[in-house]
Each structure stands twice: as C-alpha cells, then as structure tokens.
Image (cartoon, rainbow, N blue to C red; front, top):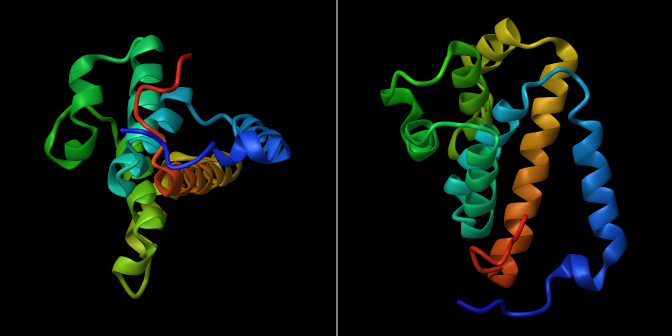
Length: 152
C-alpha cells in the first residue's frame, strides 16, 4: 500500500506541534500510559487505521504489555486480561469513537463506570486522548498512510 499524498503533518508542520502538545498535556492527569495505548489501539481498530493499530500495538509491546492482551483488545469484553478500570476506558473509547451508532452516544452506565475508576482530571485526559486518536485515525485513513511506515 502506498499513501495517496504526502502526510498532512508534513505539509502543515504546525499541525503536528499542536496535536503533540495536546497529547502531552493530556498525559499529566494520572491516567496510566498503558490505558492510553489500549484506548488508542481500540479506537484505531474500530476506525480501520492500520497505521495506528500497528504503531500503538508496538508501543504497548515496548512498554512490556503481553501478547495476549495486545492481540485481544478487540475482544476485551470476552477475555479476563483487563481490569475494571481498563474495561471502563475501553467502553468509553468505543462509545466516543462510534458516536453515530446510538441516540445517546455515551449512555449513563458507560459514563458512571468510567467515573468510578478515574478522577475528574484523569477522565478529562482520557476523553482528550480518545479525541486525539480519532483525529489521527481520520488523517491517516484519508491519505492511506501505510502500516509499518512509522519507526519509533
């Protein structure tokens, strides 16, 4: 697979600075780094962004995450390898990524479960991280950025 065009962040370099600054700011509220990466992989799976699925799965592996947890993110409900806080983050990730799938995109049960596990600041960071990865997914999908072109 070949990209359709030069990546927009190369053409508009200040956009990269802005996205990275927002991402870095949204890592300061106590949200576990692995939880952020789990959310990034799950949203990327839903959106079909092979570039981000590859990149963030590799980051999870580099952070010491087990293969079984990485490979089963899409089936998190049916596996015993995620704790309640991670499950709440993954449910919120799915809800905020699939906003058009239901009349109430973030129903109270999903919201309340996330609130049980995260402080208000950590929850704000999670919401921002989900929004950021959805933005990256849409940019990469539009230009067909190939998986594996990231080297980190």
